[in-house]
Length: 95
Image 1 (cartoon, rainbow, N blue to C red):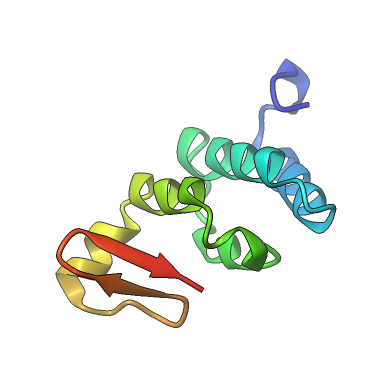
Image 2: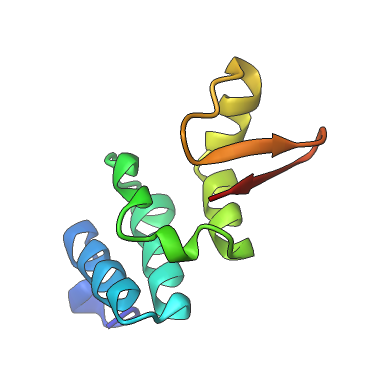
């Protein structure tokens, strides 16, 4: 479904990510999230936090946040929100 041309739209990718997360499939979850939020430019990035708590420590989740520009925003504003914190000058962690 990740590569099927009939599924290449935001809602379907978000659905794939959600179901995969609930099943504990990090590979599919993170691939679908990246496709939805970065490649297809979803505008509801607030949805990346739930139900993906189990994915937040995965390096691919950190890449997603960087690719979305959230890390640059957090560093510029100092507003890291509830789930991520800076670690040194160039890194961060999420919980």
